[in-house]
Structures are given as C-alpha cells and as structure tokens.
Length: 365
Image (cartoon, rainbow, N blue to C red; front, top):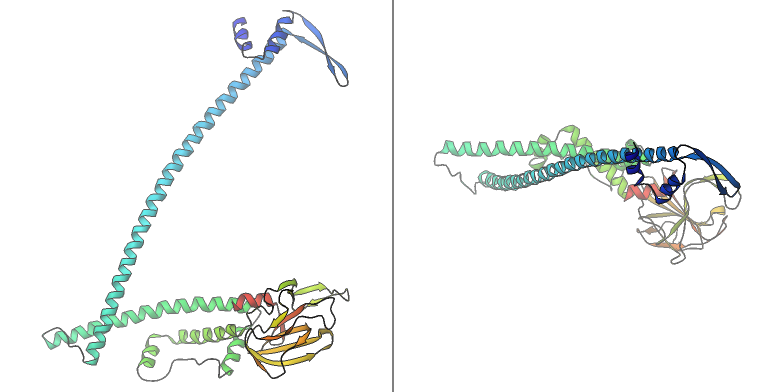
C-alpha cells in the first residue's frame, strides 16, 4: 500500500507532496488558511491527501480510457468515410461514362433522323430513287421510312405535350400570384385581334400533318399558353425610375401626412440622380392632368385591362391620347398633391384592381 501511494504521489504537484510530508502519520491536524473574509480552519490528515491523489489518478485513468475509445471510434468513422468517398468517385465515373454514352447515342440518332428525313423527302419528290433493284423492295423501303417518320412524330408530339403542360402550369402559377383568372385572360386575349392567332389551320400539307399528330387537347393547351404568354408580355416590366429606390411598399401603412392607417395601393420610388419618369411599358396615355391628392398624374393603358399610374409629378411631358413606347420619358419626379416630400407614387391596375408592382415585375420578367 505504501509503495502504491508513493508511486501515485510521484505524479502529484510538489506542493501537495510537501504538504503530505509535513502531516503526522496517524493524526489529524488543523490548518488555518487566510481568505478575503478572514481565515478558514481546515482539518486534514495524511490519509486525506492520499485519498485525494488516488481519486485523481483513478479519474485520469478513466479519462484516458474514454479518450482511447473515442480515438478508436474516430478511426472507424474515417475508414467508413474513406470507403464512402471511394464509392462516390466510382459512382461519379460511372455516371460520366453513362452520360458520354447517352450523348453519343443522341448524336447518332440525330444523324440517322437527318438522313432519314432527307431520303424520305427525296423519294417522295421523285428526286431520289430507291436503291433496291426490285420495285417491291423499293416500296418496302419507302414504307419503312414512313413508319420511322410516324414513330418520330409520335414521340416528338408526346414530349411536346409534356413540355406544354409544364409550361402552362408555370404560367398559371404566375397569374395566380397576381390573382388573375386565366379564363379572363384567355377571353381578353382572344377578343384582341391584334395580339395573336391560334389553332391549327384546316388545310392541306402541314396543317393536316399537325392535326394528325397533335391531340385536340394539346391544341387547346397551346392556345391557352399563347394567350397567357401574350398577357404576360403585355405586363409593364420596366422600373419607371432608373436607379430608383423604393421608400414605401404595397399594402397597409400609416399615411405620412394624415397619420391614419390606410391602404397604400402602389409603391413609392425616389431617385436624386435621375428624376425623370419613364413609361414602364408601351401603351396609350389615358390621363395626364392635375388630380387632387395625387397631384400631377399620368395613367397609361397597356391593353388587356392593364394600366399603370404615375402620381405627384413635378411636370407632365405627355398628352392624353398620346402613344408612348416602353422606357419613354413622361415627366419628372415631384411633390405635387398630398405628400410630405418629392417622390414617384407608382401603381399597376389589372382590370381596375390594384396589385403589387413588385409582384408584377417578378412575373413580367
């Protein structure tokens, strides 16, 4: 027991060893320890020191054992990660090889289709004769080409149908974000004879070919997509102030002059570098005059029920009935009407309903 305690104390701090040597072997003595509050009286014996050192040595061994276990676990994790990394590298190489093969197949298929279309066109026009010596074999060659053409058109129509369906869904989501009814859009665009044409022509040649391979449902989808795309292209997508900074957004707010909470039906923009105001889209000026709280105000009709408003202008540079192009200057930023400072109040109205111009920017772009 004495040898074990002596061995353990050899690792103890020198001051602790010196303290133990000063203590009686079988007695407990009282030590006075000065503190900030006075003095503390501690009773201690050599056995207390031995137990303290023994406990510390026991805890140290436990910590060393846990450290070894943690190191072993970390080594296992590293081995697993190394194996997983190798698997990823192998999988990446395999995917790259498959991609290269697919690309090669696509190129080969494309070349074969080009040759097939060229040969079929030549045979159909009489410019190229079948290479077979027997007439029956020549007919079979043309029949094979037509069958291949039929399969190619069928696959193309199916892929197009899926793409049209997905694109129409995306357009529908954009219009829904503006709270616009797609049926209303289709009706508005269809009534505008200058906006688009639609449908599949009932004629010979390409019209009959499209009518054969394009399902009636997809034809309707194509018309719907064309209408929605025409509507979206009419949305004003240009910031009316070049470099303008938005100082107030769309929605409820405390009015800067009256102090009451009211609906802010547009956004406020400020630019001290360039105070000119430009049309956010092409259209016809339907109002250009002083309008009470709005001050000098310009309203532009962009068609299909889409209208933009520019208020509090210091100067109006257009006249009612005038056609303006997208980006054309229409006035200067000002503080006319009910306002607490110079800025542009900009609104977008869809069928006389105010919408957030920022959301219109997102959908239009």
